[in-house]
Length: 170
Image (cartoon, rainbow, N blue to C red; front, top):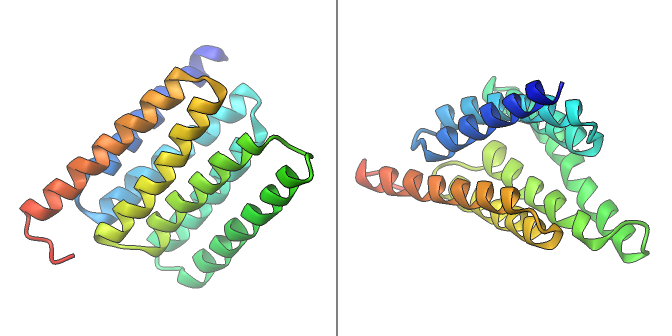
């Protein structure tokens, strides 16, 4: 089972990097949807169900946006938005460590970029989310999380560079 989980994690990592480096918004959504599906399966197989739940929400949100179901995507985005203050409140009262807030905010920013933004605004929101994920990696001492999110930030830099080279008006 671990081999399958880690294989799915590697696939998800590759899909995410390819998507974030792509200057085309629709292609980024396609690759990120596939990457989120692979990440969700990866974390489910590892037994991390809070991460799985957030990724399933992201998959539903991205799929709805991609297929033009803006109303559904918006409602799912509102659910994602509502999760942020709930987790923040839980961290404030000591029900969970504050570190748990970093990936929730990071995930919200990434999801907002992918389903609610276009062009450079999309890249900026995703980049902001990746910074929170780097912070989470630093906070828990995970070199893998730090490295993967720094690579994702590099891929986003490639996306912005390619967009500028293509003469994108954004």
